[in-house]
Image (cartoon, rainbow, N blue to C red):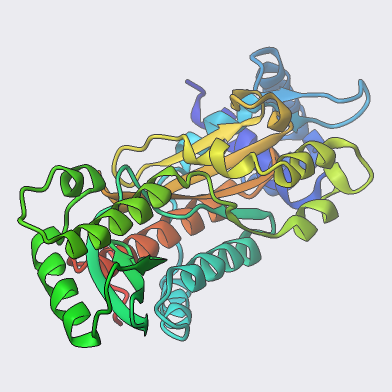
Amino acid sequence: MLNPRSETILSSIIRQYIERAIPVSSASVATECGLDVCSATVRNEMMRLEEEGYILKPHHSAGSVPSDKGYRYYVESIKHAQLPINEQLLINHLFHQVEKEMENWLSLAAGLVSQRVHNVAVVTQPRQTSSKYHHLELVTLQENLALAVLILRGARVRQQLVSFDNSISQFELAAMSGKLNEGFDGQTRSQIEKSAMLLSDTEKKVQAAVIKMMQAEDEQRNEEPYLEGLNYLLEQPEFARSQRAHSLMELVEKRRLGPMLGDEEFQGQEIKVYIGQENREETIRDYSVVLGSYGLPNEARGTLGVIGPTRMNYEKTIAAVRYLSLVMSALVAELYGREPGATDCGN
């Protein structure tokens, strides 16, 4: 543990480096850290921080920059950061200006986070371990052909044509869908396959179509995430004229970013921060990643994250990711007919 003076000096170095992206001198720290000490004392403390691995000197005669260890120490001190109330109210208002569709919410969440932290924001689709039946509509197209529209929990929709051996009326289709809706509501594909419900041959055709649609949904993994803010990243001094940005662009182009973020496991509303070399993915070890999870535990979970230089504004980023995760969790709960959690987005 650092003593209070060392903590203050380290915090000053990090905040100045985040803001200016240039090595920080002892004179600058002495001026801005708020301690009643001379430059020589600050210089000695900075030498100690360097010896202990919290800061680095990129050049012998230059000022100092934080190391991954220094950033980690700092992040632990601000990991409970919260957005100001006025920003929370604005975000709630903006979410209620868009139609209640998951795609709109995901796009808005990525845009809002990116605009606030000036880095890349990524939001993955909420996914279920197994899709669950919610509602089926059958619409007649021809005498022996109908369109099956299957709505799954979480407002996911699948469609498939179903052909019958004999002509069938819309009245009969409505009766059939009503029977299946009553019997299959909330069930997984496996449960529907093993269902003991007595079904006619015609109803079994529809059951087979439902199973096929649910199988397609269950097998669809790692959809392309919603991503905003690459332009902010490319404007950062670290990446503007560097090959460093190429690694992230490659992940985006090869559609590996969503799977990489979606593999994380979370406990409740925790926010995870990976700094530089802490990242498991070698191609993003020049970056820091801040991740939050949203949705319903054990039912449908998505990931919301920010990727940026290790010099990112961690306090603002952690606060934004935390609050947007809460908002998205409340919206997903609403889709599933549950009570909103900690954040009431109805205000």
